[in-house]
Length: 204
Image (cartoon, rainbow, N blue to C red; front, side, top):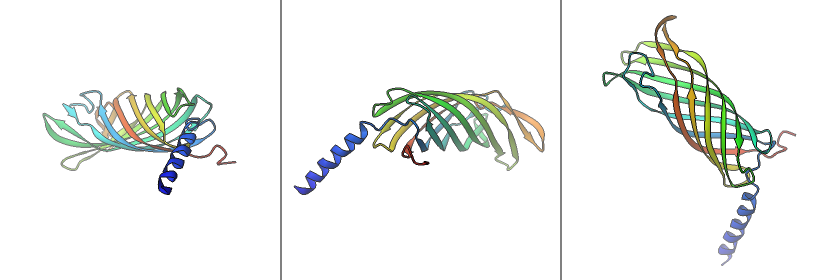
């Protein structure tokens, strides 16, 4: 009986916290997430037939500028994608995407908060052949659009699902500072994870 009462009190407390959970105006948040990257072009690497999707891991910080707008900085890393030529694995590629952007957050007073965003991306990577040769992928400046949801469990913790399209021009692939090809980092990145929000006056 006592345990049942405790469970009910806990549930009521969580519900009362959730009712005001989504307002992040003036608050910092940190995120961790995992998902996947899918190339949007067959010619992701020049002279190849296919680049396989890869596992994406990352983290971000977010700051509530106002009731509906927030700024976010994000780092997403893909440690390996298989690059094939005529169906056979020929290269391993890794990519890192550093991005800065703005979000518009709908229904910030609700527990479930959809958002849309856009921003700028700085992309860099490495390429190695199955024989061991190393190549560099030059830095590229591009952009992204994103859509997602935050579902607040408590005032300070939210589950997130984020879907991002990355668009950028082609960049050079070099070996010993000599151009040997090009790569096109246009891709779709989908991730899920958690956000941890600090109290509004955490740094005051």
